[in-house]
Image (tube, rainbow, N blue to C red):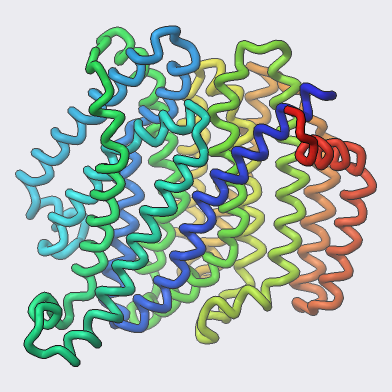
Length: 493
């Protein structure tokens, strides 16, 4: 029990720190939504949204699974310096090649992506700067330096946010009051989109400068055999990442394309704004994944790792079930983050929350194909999810609008979760406590449904259901909760 508590103490500590690095920046990014919609017309905001969608897709291509491959081989190989060096050289060369080709075909690239030509240079530079810090950030996680990771991530987004506020709000006012000064000289009217990308570029450049020590300290030894092994491991992860990104962002593209032109942008805005209310589950799942991914690989050769993997998933479901119900119950409080004009899409919130919950469980279940070097299964599952996303959106958007996108997201992630569980039992059977998982998730989903749809988001009824659920959790888990609390408050390790 003591070893188990020590394991959980370390895991949840890292998860909290990674969560801080993930949740706080994204919470700050909420400010940008009303800011952008205030200073830009819908067409301009649509342009920004489209470009950020392509950012998400190209980030996966430029990483090509090397981050996950780095974790696998960093923990497996005795010569860790060789793994670091080979990974850094691989990303560096591929990024330089991308800059060369993208710059050579800028006009064609802009046309293919439906992006105005004047923005394509910013896109290329920002993507390249972000690619160059993939391995340095992965090394911080692999070396179990979550504090450094969190500080640099938060600095990046805080700088980005500050620059956005300066360029979009403060600079126009200062330029008006100082008509002959420097600020007036650098202020350009109707330059909002470019200012947004300048802010991103500066933040990414500062981050690379901070992380450049990884390149300066490396002896630059390139192991071709190791690189081929890492590439073979990572490319299926890239395919899975592309499919995952389609699941995450492609519905926006389809909504904009398939809805009637006179309502497409407004419907997309309502959907995207209410989607953000469900990000609390995504924050938790992402933070948990960042904390456990290095743990999965570092404990793969330990005594009885399957039992530890099972326990981690069990407690992810417990915590996730609580978060699902909490967000659903307090949706009418959280909706105050967004403007009233967007509230029409609130019924998608429980659907997206449940979809994110399924995705979080899927990431926990994915340990089997990562530690057994069967990453191609991750690609298969994600491709199935992407296919479901595209088909459901294509068939149902003309009939039910953004509800189709929400249902497609849930169907895709639930299918991926079940497929990973079924195949995992065949190839790397982990002793999950299925009774506990099914009980907590089922009760949470039932109470969420009652609170949101039956009691029509009545805060008193929802709070009562939440209190009942929390009481169940406490009564069933009080012993492990007591031991965890004692382990955290204890002075001993």
